Length: 174
Image 1 (cartoon, rainbow, N blue to C red):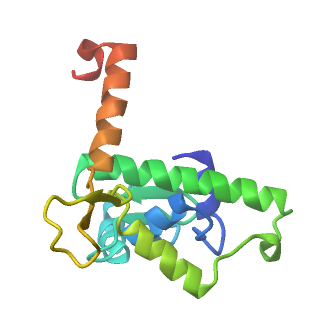
Image 2 (image 1 turned 30 degrees about the vertical axis):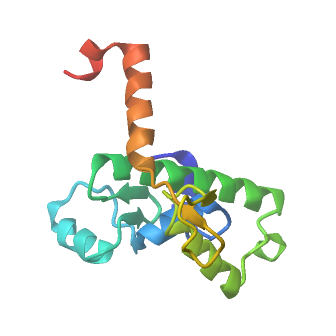
């Protein structure tokens, strides 16, 4: 587990909504599982599944670290990437504030709602208004076009190509 993600798992407050990376993780759904010792006892499995819940994709093992359970490997890669970045930012913020949460910029409920609303459109490029050849729309012949990207897929493809370049395809696909 990433050191900063493990450090966050050891706090009582867990992931805080301090950055767009943390908002990404929080919108995937985050659950917590109490520390039971080394995670190598099969009797713990039903409790892990129960604590993850039916829709959450991130499980923080308290005093241990995170697990991501996303529908695809690309989404799992992006989920872990943004979660670990969020934890790095959070640990640095807390360190800079001397551990005092009152010295950290925490979004109010209205701002948090806006952060979540924007994160739900994370894969959408900003809208561009373009001229329409048939001026039938109410905004003077201009329509908004929006591009949608598969950000997790693009991130994973880039990481895979980087690994292939460094290690060669023979060593990473055995």
